[in-house]
Length: 233
Length: 325
Image 1: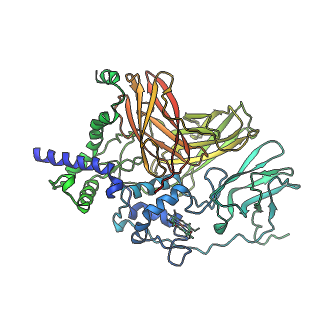
Image 2: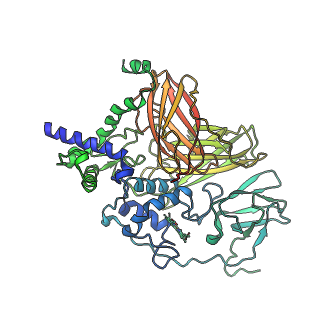
Image 3: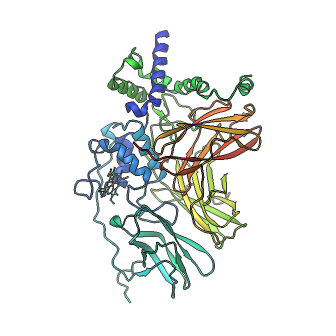
């Protein structure tokens, strides 16, 4: 009993020490591991680009991801990876690629806790990467800051063009009845990763709507809902 | 007795006061150590990094109950997280992300008016409305509300509609501009969620808050004063900062919705929101929070402490510096 207590007391001391010295010794102080949790987040949020044959170095295995741990934390904190380029919660997008706060927490806890691997038995199925079909080139309207709609539109998506690097831009639609609809809040949007923001629900904007918040040198494509198959006018 | 005595001590002895508390928190690891049958007798100094890692790993492997919120807390027995008091769960659940629809009425919001927010949470598998929530800090649904200028802050609890079982709340809109709400809930069978939504009250300007630097002077709440010391004194973005709060008077403190303290840190541009509870607290006047400011910006940090039935909400404006070599 006494020995057990000494032993456990020591364990506790080490644990407390480990928490303090986590940075210095990379001691494991997290319940989050690669196999069970982090791999799933990476597959969902990063692997579309970070994989063999993708547009960036592969992060799909523990061996590949582990050396990048510190850089990953930096990119996640700075919101530069994944390069989604918009702040969550300002407009809602069905193709949203930004990490959830819970995912950020888990990845940061994993990295700060020593980035343990866990049991490879827990790994999920490797993801499949469907070819992404860019929305068909519908007739889009292009608007600039201060533009006023002369006729009503229904929009299904937004594509920002020529956005200056590194800025923060809250783009809104001011409706004639006085309402202000958040459209998209660009943050760390990079034209090289430029993409459409596809709305969760189509948005009707009446004639007289004014667009605000678009940087002076930029423009915004208003993407209409896809026309139904077989229906053409 | 102890509380009274502590209250009369000079508040400067933060470091020393935290020592015994730290041991209390480590007791959780103690349980794991017993179960793990860890055999090493060498002190920390005598171990190589690899041995230390193996030992810590063994301690952790022995613990099968986790706190779903404080990811470094675990135990080999069921119980409650000493930090946030959430029930520990068997095995860390895989993260699942729920969707949340928010309807804001009326359509045209006005400064000085109110808005009703209706929330429908849907599960990610069948997209069906979720009505079963874990009780987290005594409530099934927490909501933080901030105006873009960070001049308005509220931590409120939407109520459940008896018919639909969905949550709703009426919010005051003291000013024009952008509002951000952060919904904090934990669906049964899922993982804790923190979901942001914004809406705009017309008439204001959309620009970041002017958050300055103001964190060394004590703050006066309703019935207590709060003093803050950070370690390091000048916090660095991306690195953990320790926040030592001392409240005076130190007696009469009570848990407020299930914790000795609540903290929300928000960057001046509203992009980062970090929510936390004391890393170390025992009902005495000193509490330690851990916080990593994600980016080099100024942050407004709200803390809430309850004393004699009164909730005190105060804030500090803390800059996080860029790490330079």
